[in-house]
Length: 67
Image (cartoon, rainbow, N blue to C red; front, side, top):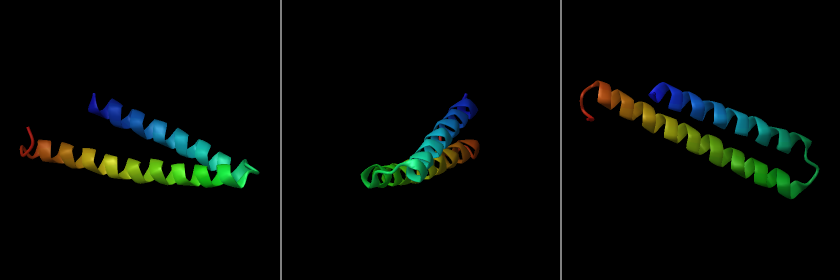
């Protein structure tokens, strides 16, 4: 079950990142480009931190330190 959750999160974040990059590359409006760049930072910055926390929790559980 955990694998499905992590995999689903990775797919959603990859699709969102792909779409945000498309907006940055193809959009003529400077404000929309700035918003897309900001959202890209939120998505990938938060995504890597969240994934690291999940991986750390799984590792602590494997070691028997987290119930």
